[in-house]
Image (tube, rainbow, N blue to C red; front, side, top):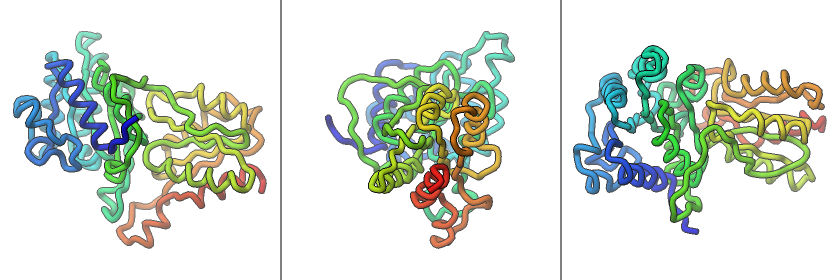
Length: 325
């Protein structure tokens, strides 16, 4: 099986779907002439032309609204935000129109639109460019939220997102675009709403998603050397959330650690904690541990940023805590 970069997997998914369906187009800042801010649309302008790969002004509210309107009229737009930090300028269109239009129209309108781009921190980008928005958008009924962690999942999930008749928030990371992974040559999709057990284990369940899951894998390798077996679940989709996979794992390991790159208050790990304690309380041999960023805006200083972000040492410490070691 070939090995390609995350950005190449994204470009392949979009291009394959655009060849299949002429109603699909890509629109966003620098997606055309510049081949994408992170080169995730490289070559697409040459293949599909300026009518289907459209550069926009720096006006997220405007082009998000154009996307929603065109989705109501039979198109299947892919709207790229250079970063989801900039989506805050267009969030009114996403929340109040894309997410709610089916209900408000009594089912007369589907909104088959994908909003995609990077989320969370990406090095020294400081407070206004390092925010994780997964739980923000997952809080809104009507939206699906997908956060892949590797090229294989990214391609399969993006193809499914583009084919979906509901609006999908598809979140990536600047720090993953260069990641390499095995991706099949042929056609494939992955179902939205299904988590993946990336590593089977018996002593503790670790749940994570997106780029921060790499710290869980590192921690699991370290803990294995000490005789501790970790089961690592990649959510892949935040909404809908795959409760069954999590609960089945917790009923086996009896312990749960959740790793999420987000502020501690009211996030995805908080929701998982509630669901597990309400549906699998009798199986828990220790309180659930959740690991998040520090409860402050992201710092610029590399030394402070290292303290702010969760890391493998935090995961090792949390696992040993739930194992009473």
